[in-house]
Length: 188
Image: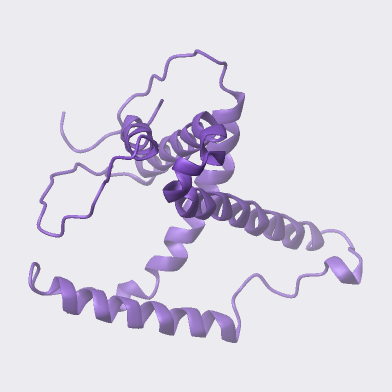
């Protein structure tokens, strides 16, 4: 698997192990410093998630795997959402140059009042999470303005990487080894 951590966690959970959240755990991670590096990393993650889903799909239909059903459902819903949004954007772009039937016409790809509702919901979630995290990190409020844009940027990045990474997992030859090159992370 190209993302061994996802593979290990699914394998453990399918074998009845518990993986739990530990709020006091600390880890160190080097993030890609360029947009290109971030895109490559996220495409690899999307491909790895699809590879794991493909490998363990049949196992999900067993009763003892029922604890994984919500995770599998959420993953499948995310992939479907990504392709629906991608299709909507393609149709919108196509209609800028060609006439499309009224039932395919998309007025705007920008969110309307529902987008405002999403932003308000996100800000409420961020406020709650910041109050919880304030015990661990100080000065979180200085980033509050940027939190408005985070969900939109994250969702678009997720959509793009899923649309690219999902087919890569299914076009990969059976038995082919997972090899990847780490993107630039600021350490030479």
